[in-house]
Image (cartoon, rainbow, N blue to C red):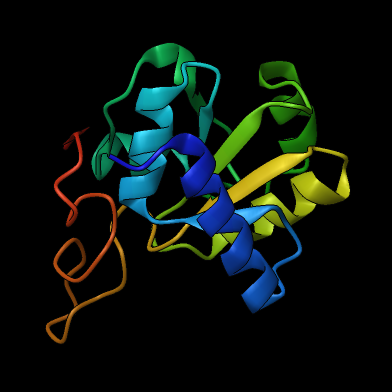
Length: 154
């Protein structure tokens, strides 16, 4: 079993290699291991409430699962209160793992949080559903769901 410090070290190396503007990037499996290994680690699901309700969501302890929409639904406009809402839920020294559908919004959220003095922001690579397969379906190529990690669907 890989330790939390080994996972975070690997995540930091990814950030350095990719010149990411945040602490690092973890695979879904690494994110789950971090969450299991430390109850202080928080997963920040930046998908819309509609996505969580209609597509599904991770199954982890409620105190570790933060929901802060990056975009608003149905407007699909940026959430102007993103930082305020994040600040109401997480301390700036907490290890934060950002999750979205395929890993795009989570990168933006990790970057913005880092720029606003959150010290330990990590993107969850591949996201919840991952990219589309050749038939246009998600959850078949990569992501939290494809990895067989705990989640519930709509």
